Length: 93
Image (cartoon, rainbow, N blue to C red; front, side, top):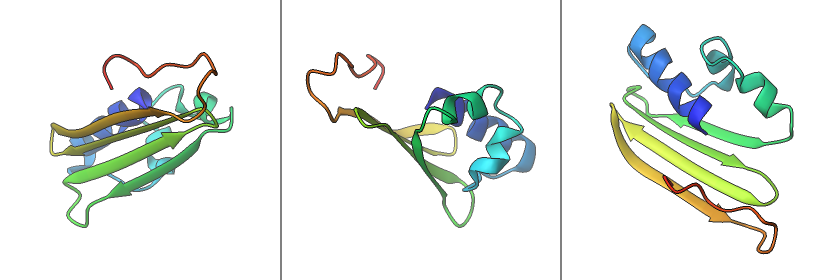
Protein backbone atom coordinates (compact mmCIF):
# COMPACT_ATOMS: atom_id res chain seq x y z
CA UNK A 1 0.00 0.00 0.00
CA UNK A 2 2.81 2.41 0.80
CA UNK A 3 4.31 1.93 -2.67
CA UNK A 4 0.95 2.63 -4.30
CA UNK A 5 0.38 5.71 -2.13
CA UNK A 6 3.85 7.09 -2.83
CA UNK A 7 3.47 6.23 -6.50
CA UNK A 8 0.17 8.12 -6.71
CA UNK A 9 1.71 11.15 -5.01
CA UNK A 10 4.70 11.08 -7.38
CA UNK A 11 2.41 10.65 -10.39
CA UNK A 12 0.20 13.53 -9.23
CA UNK A 13 3.22 15.80 -8.81
CA UNK A 14 4.37 15.07 -12.35
CA UNK A 15 1.00 15.03 -14.11
CA UNK A 16 -1.23 17.28 -12.01
CA UNK A 17 -3.71 14.50 -11.26
CA UNK A 18 -3.92 11.07 -9.66
CA UNK A 19 -4.32 8.04 -11.93
CA UNK A 20 -6.74 5.12 -11.87
CA UNK A 21 -4.31 2.95 -13.85
CA UNK A 22 -1.98 0.69 -11.92
CA UNK A 23 0.27 0.50 -14.99
CA UNK A 24 0.99 4.24 -14.65
CA UNK A 25 2.35 3.62 -11.16
CA UNK A 26 4.77 0.91 -12.27
CA UNK A 27 6.92 3.55 -13.94
CA UNK A 28 7.17 5.79 -10.85
CA UNK A 29 7.12 3.29 -7.99
CA UNK A 30 10.21 1.09 -7.80
CA UNK A 31 9.49 -2.31 -6.35
CA UNK A 32 5.74 -2.23 -6.97
CA UNK A 33 5.84 -4.85 -9.73
CA UNK A 34 7.83 -7.17 -7.46
CA UNK A 35 5.25 -6.83 -4.69
CA UNK A 36 2.34 -7.47 -7.05
CA UNK A 37 3.75 -10.81 -8.22
CA UNK A 38 2.88 -12.45 -4.89
CA UNK A 39 -0.81 -12.42 -5.80
CA UNK A 40 -2.19 -9.25 -4.25
CA UNK A 41 -5.52 -7.99 -5.56
CA UNK A 42 -5.42 -4.23 -6.19
CA UNK A 43 -8.31 -1.90 -6.90
CA UNK A 44 -7.40 1.63 -7.87
CA UNK A 45 -9.69 4.52 -8.69
CA UNK A 46 -9.25 8.24 -9.23
CA UNK A 47 -11.90 10.92 -9.17
CA UNK A 48 -13.01 12.39 -12.49
CA UNK A 49 -11.05 15.57 -11.77
CA UNK A 50 -7.95 13.60 -10.69
CA UNK A 51 -7.83 15.27 -7.28
CA UNK A 52 -8.85 12.16 -5.30
CA UNK A 53 -7.70 8.58 -5.37
CA UNK A 54 -8.80 5.39 -3.64
CA UNK A 55 -6.73 2.21 -3.37
CA UNK A 56 -7.58 -1.19 -1.92
CA UNK A 57 -4.95 -3.89 -1.60
CA UNK A 58 -6.06 -7.34 -0.48
CA UNK A 59 -4.49 -10.70 0.16
CA UNK A 60 -6.18 -13.81 1.51
CA UNK A 61 -5.47 -12.63 5.08
CA UNK A 62 -5.41 -8.80 5.01
CA UNK A 63 -7.28 -5.91 3.40
CA UNK A 64 -5.93 -2.33 3.27
CA UNK A 65 -7.69 0.81 2.05
CA UNK A 66 -6.19 4.25 1.56
CA UNK A 67 -7.56 7.41 -0.05
CA UNK A 68 -6.37 10.96 -0.54
CA UNK A 69 -8.03 14.18 -1.58
CA UNK A 70 -5.22 16.35 -2.82
CA UNK A 71 -2.38 15.75 -0.37
CA UNK A 72 -4.76 15.11 2.55
CA UNK A 73 -5.16 11.51 3.73
CA UNK A 74 -8.92 10.92 4.01
CA UNK A 75 -9.00 7.15 4.58
CA UNK A 76 -6.48 4.67 5.95
CA UNK A 77 -7.85 1.38 7.23
CA UNK A 78 -6.83 -2.21 7.69
CA UNK A 79 -8.79 -5.38 8.34
CA UNK A 80 -7.41 -8.81 9.17
CA UNK A 81 -9.53 -11.23 7.13
CA UNK A 82 -8.11 -14.44 8.52
CA UNK A 83 -7.86 -14.51 12.29
CA UNK A 84 -5.06 -16.63 13.70
CA UNK A 85 -2.90 -16.10 10.61
CA UNK A 86 -0.26 -14.27 12.63
CA UNK A 87 -0.82 -11.16 10.51
CA UNK A 88 -1.55 -7.84 12.19
CA UNK A 89 -2.56 -4.47 10.83
CA UNK A 90 0.24 -1.90 10.69
CA UNK A 91 0.11 0.58 13.55
CA UNK A 92 -0.30 3.45 11.08
CA UNK A 93 -3.52 2.03 9.57
